[in-house]
Amino acid sequence: MASPLTQPQPQPPTPSPSPSFSYETSPHLYLFTSLTSGSSHIITATSRLETILKAHRVAFKAIDCATDERARRIWTRRAGPRRLPGLVREGDVLADLDAVEEWNEAGELRARLAASASASASARGGEAPSRERENDVPSFFAKGAAHRQRQDASRSTSASAPAADAGEPSSRAKKTTFKGAAPDKSGEGAAGAAEEASKSVGD
Image 1 (cartoon, rainbow, N blue to C red):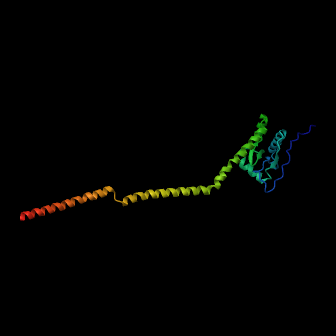
Image 2 (cartoon, helix red, strand yellow):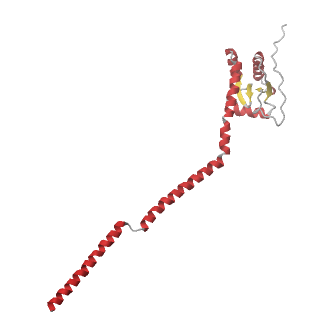
Image 3 (cartoon, rainbow, N blue to C red):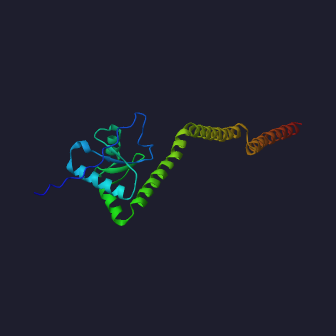
């Protein structure tokens, strides 16, 4: 009687790390799975993924998300439509079994893993300027306040200029006032001439 086929068993997961440990800062490659869930699909897929990684001599550590709360949160938050098992480095989900098999068939597994690591590092490097901008928020608002003060000062200066001009009579107004006084003097001369004429007639 033929012996039944034995299902390949994946290696035991790595024990949960210390409380101060963070997957988001660890440079190691992790294989996230869920062996204690009892799913035959996950067990078979995990064994297949391990076989591919070992064939390419890629070092990794297996993590059981069913017993590791931090690993489960990372996978739930960042895996998207991908299913366990999957590869994770520095908190980023790099690939699931489907992607790893495609890379393996194309002979691009190691190159793809290296490219994924570089892309993750570049993304983290791009966050540095944003942190600097966040830390520079007080100086940004200080510059804006100084700019508003300069604008207010320029407005007050431009508003006071017309007022000063209105307080001083213009040369045209002065000339008009002078011309207006001339008829009065001419009137006085006419009155004097009339009086002299009447005197002469009386004499």
